[in-house]
Length: 114
Image (cartoon, rainbow, N blue to C red):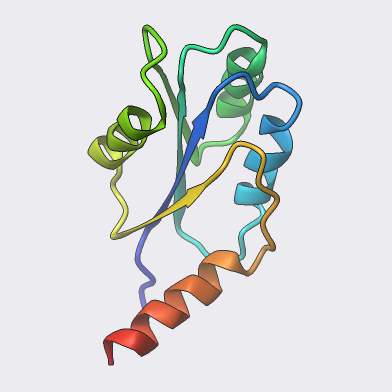
């Protein structure tokens, strides 16, 4: 069975202390295939630099940066516009998720739809 691509969307603002662990948590998901889209909302800390280094290291990551701070709703809409996944899960920039989070969410959606 081919499993659908799930997009993990993360908005980030001044999250240099937490963003690396949040993204690693997303990367540790047992579900594959995934893509991780991160929108930096014009942070003034080093969060965007951390994200750029991670995007070079991990092929699942795509990052974008707002030219000025536009807020979480605007940033989430950018994630939706750039998403290639059949499903979308939003993680926060300070989330640490269990590796089975996406698998459980997918299973719950499919069971509900039946």
